[in-house]
Image (cartoon, rainbow, N blue to C red):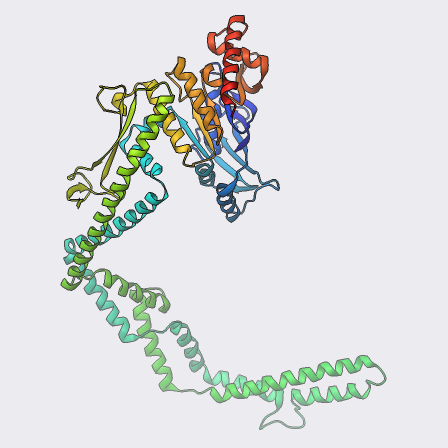
Length: 585
């Protein structure tokens, strides 16, 4: 759950901290006091889009910080992801998150003690928090969102089937598009293939080897300067170990080192330091002997070969002809040839290949159609369960005669999607299958079954949304649920029922509710009030926890706008007593 939320410099909020608890947290306050900024802060903390226009001019940046404590599989998944990114949870297992937005629009995120991309906050948010507001109600009116909601409800087996369909669809479209492209651009492909073959033939004739240009350059330098290299090597070898022209008057380095070593060894008994130096001279003599032997071997291999030099010149000229056309060096030419061979296979427009692609496309189309049929059947089965469970929840939300229906219909062919025959019906097929899903509401017996956007009022839509969330909560989902005025347009007994449902959700989830309804606020385990301070030159808001008498006064304000009214306080205390009784297990 989210244990604490601190907001600084955001909208009317200068600096405030929200101490949150498990169960149901309610946030209330006068219109314009800054309740929306709390939800905006939550959105920023979990990777939402930053709006620089909401940042206070002083101090010029908004900071939202939170402490998150997770459990079970969600904790394992989030902690593993954070650790992979270089962060780490605190010693007590909690996770610190931070988001900073400046007035210039720059944004920074920190997670687990490390700077992170903002997208990482979004990944954590998907696992830990679900935010529902009036915009989410509008989103639920879209057919694509309704289909996604049904797929989410259908469960892991359905999701696995849907993943298989998406994978098969991607493979099918890739083959179909490839085949169409080869047929449509056959002339251009053949022209490009001819040019590639000419280049490959030229490169194959020369047959360049990796690093060959550098090796030939070095060999050419040796052959061109063979006499000078031989003279230098011979002189060096004679100086080190003597040679045919060495005399007693010109002793070699080996003799001199030997004489020096023996002279020092003779005095080593008098001073051991000279013995150590003599040993080092012996090492030097060994090294000189090795170098002399290597010089002899080098001289044996050094040969002024005009024919070989001419061959090297011709070979380098052939390689330069390739590097002028295809790459900067021989290794680049070899890489170009590899790419050309790969590209040639892509450009193939032979009848055999086209027939093979056509057969593969038909096979994959059959696989996609089969999977789409199975996905549709799974949706049909889930639709019945989903509608029944949401209808039960609506009965508890003061809509006892309302019913929800979930229609799973074949998507009409002839639109932008390709068409396939699924279960004997021609449908438009997409990665999510060939179905259209529509949530319908029967407001009362005898009423027509109408799509939500046509059949539900604002208050009814709020209750349908809450009923759906209650159903989803029963099958898992994020541990923290945020509701931003989803009770808009609701009052009376329906408001009390919404409070009951939110309290029931709070038994298994942490629930944060921004509300104007005292009937909902009465069910809170913790009641937070956003209060506006207009005493200074600049209006600011802060958040405080209210309890006991102070809480009754806040509910009285919400009921009648009169926090000091005895009648209002009595009514508020009655609401609190009712809620306390309902919350008992």
